[in-house]
Image (cartoon, rainbow, N blue to C red; front, side, top):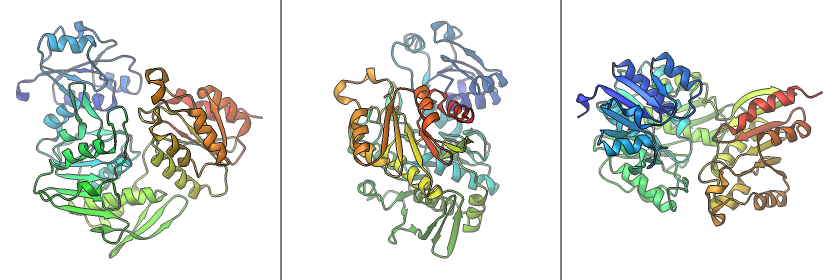
Length: 465
């Protein structure tokens, strides 16, 4: 079927992964077009450089040429004019994960990195270890590794390393995205309840992961965090080899003698000591997953360490955006209580004697809800002061489902934290301009743009007198 395709239209081309796939197919000689609302730089300029036309709105007329294939983005649903036209005229269509499977992964050795936390860091670090050692991997990552400067690359090499997301595929395919990725190796870094908009409970998340594990071939490999109790019920399988990694001595690959510095970590496995230019226990676990996978794929400990030595991190993962007025502003993508807690633990190691402010935007489909009402308060333990912004898109939730920011603030105050609730980025910037002192650290937690808060905050702090 796919050999007949010459022209491809991307409905929802403004997403990072959609744009990267569109550009790669354009480079391969396909006629590519796309549509989306409000496509801004750098995506718009990137697509323009590839001579890909972007229709600035969804419309049936965008499909008048009847492309051979329409790739429908995850955010589109029934009622979208292009979706309705595709169905009415019976045009050939697929999701982005299906496209990736058929055009970029099939025939490759696919390494799929999954888990509730750490997927982007593990995938980035693994891809860099392979790249640094001359293996020329293709990759698709839900973030931007500093070593590569882009979250996607498609090569002619035999390896494809992909961040496997458990979120659903498309409006017409409610399976998790990662079931499409033809895994040879699956890393499961950890498993917790998340994505409350599509999963009812932890058991539903476990079911999604179980479906992925059922697809690992007999000549493949499952690499799982053996210290995670939520994963344990999934690991009693016999259709493929299973290895456990973790800090416990009963794991196939286990780390011991951990030492944490302000900006780096060390750990040992039997017969080798690793050094990592990332702080925090959670990053040691991330690195241990990479060690397990890379060794399975034939790399030596020394080759892995050489990749660790030159890895420079991932944007929006404890990323220092700047220092102004003596205040350090940190950007972090964390939007789950565990991610927030572990990031603040690492920042406390780095800034042991400085005041740490945590600024949190409840924006994800899980943290907008009250499923983690109590856990969120506990996650800010290592912050000295906490600011909670208005819950995003609150009107789309039933009142009984909503996170209660006032209750969260009361819990934080009861724990001895300075806590404030402010409506938006501008209000938070105005508050911190007067309250933050030289030497303080402000970590902004959001999985969105948060109104450009980082740039506004640095400008306001620099302007103080």
